[in-house]
Image (cartoon, rainbow, N blue to C red; front, top):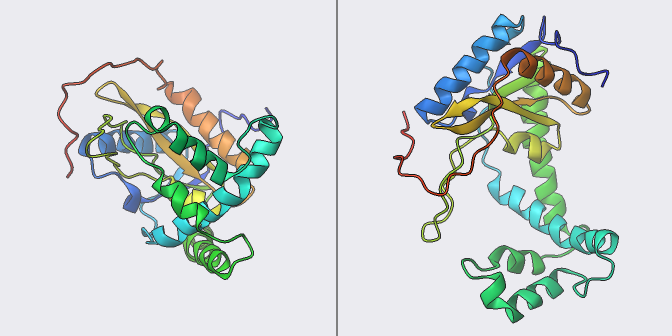
Amino acid sequence: MRALNKDALKGARIGVAREFFTGHDEVDRQIELAIAQLRLLGADVIDPVDLPRVSYDKEELSVLLHEFKHDLPLWLDTFAPHAQVRNLADVMAFNNAHHNLEQPYFGQELFTQAQALGDLDSDAYKRALATCRTQSRDEGLDRVLAQHGLDAIVAPTGGTAWLTDFINGDSSNGGFSTPAAVAGYPHLTVPAGQVRGLPVGLSFVGPAWSEARLLALGYAFEQATQWRRDPQFLARSSMPPLARD
């Protein structure tokens, strides 16, 4: 609770990572309004900062799948000690035995990939993890945060929620969740208004162990803007897709 300071943005140094804007003009216009609010609340906004999108998708997926296979049994032991499934192989077998119930619209290809991998002592995992840490930390967030003396970097959390499409799959629309997730650094998202009745968020990403500072910055923004709205269920939508610039 001590971190919740409504004046925390006064004098804070905030960088804007424009490489992570969504490309949807309606969403990005809303984020521009949020950045204007940061200035009004006393933040020193550095716009833009040089944080390029880095392609470590292959390494990131490798780390994720290795750790998922390793951690799932630990999670089951802790939170489901009496469950019949004890590891990833058991989960896959259960899904196959109940295919119509568990996989009516999709398969378990990622589970299959994870099951084929080694443990966390494998060279493949260590190489992938080292690449992710170097690119996301040393050459990414750490570099930019130190270069500009930043308290946080902001960008759109993502676009609006997309429609469920069982034929073509998900329709991702960009956003700023990946760098902090890969680095293992704190990431806070706060309401940044709505587009076509759907919420969008502004992400604050900081250095390692900056959770209290991010909470203070996000709290100050939320208290000043009051942009949160209770979510509404939309059974269907006839709205056209968001346009890209």
